[in-house]
Length: 120
View (tube, rainbow, N blue to C red):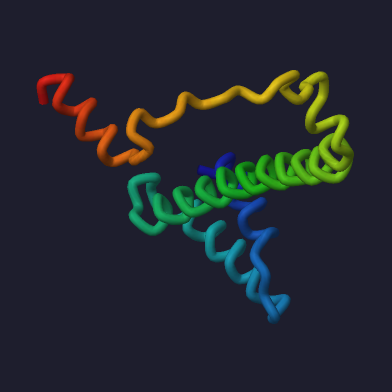
């Protein structure tokens, strides 16, 4: 329990924002008393360990999201800011493709004929 307190819980306690400087000290000293006077099966201890692990996981995920966000910003501002980098080696079609004309000139009539021909 002492090892968990020294590693996980101290990071968790240090990261807490508090207007009162003594609050962090009270939290850490309270957790120290909890380690000294109780077993690992204590519900309060288990909740504190879970909260500190959740904090660690979320702070790691937040750091990863910040890194990814910065990379995306650089790509948008750098790589994709010029048309040549977005389009690359693509080029327009040499000729416009023509669509076949409607049989009767009315698309809905053509649809009905095609529907009947298919046997539907």
